Length: 195
Image (tube, rainbow, N blue to C red; front, top):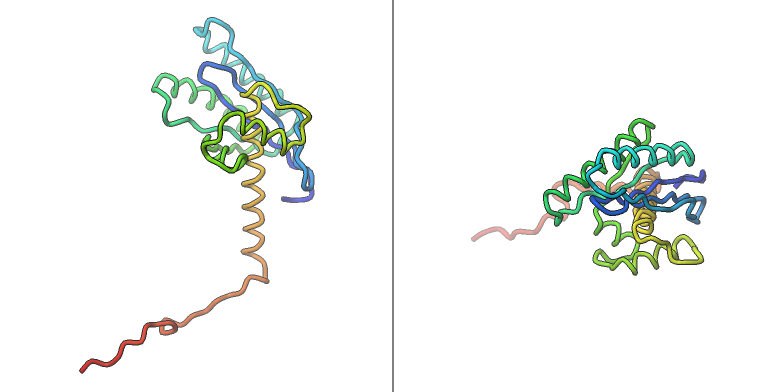
């Protein structure tokens, strides 16, 4: 990545539980956590519109305060039932709206992709992810709650993937990459003449 600090707002959207959030800044080879937390819906859950407004307000305030270069969030989990998937899609829609209003690009990653990138294993448990997030961010304690740790993991996932793409792009445009030319006859198998 560039030498300039690069910050990402990670979001772990939730259908009914807490929506986790975390801001991670990469500066050189180090990442550090700037903010983490979780927004829990008020009971009863019937006031869904109020909760969506609270999420939008929170994301807007976090963007205003930290000026992240990107928003990263988990995509809809395929195994959810239809009702839960629709609620989760609503939360994601509000997050995407807040990012779009601020002119910030948003990126989605599957839970498996986040776990594989951060913990090295796509089926890692929540505790493993929390421990890896703690290690990668050099935090004195395990990040809590788990929803906030997941949000930090999503932000770290985006930073690592963006860095890999940048390196790959730089290597593909570099003059040091050898250009290989082969004629259509080169390496063609030798076929002996028939009888």
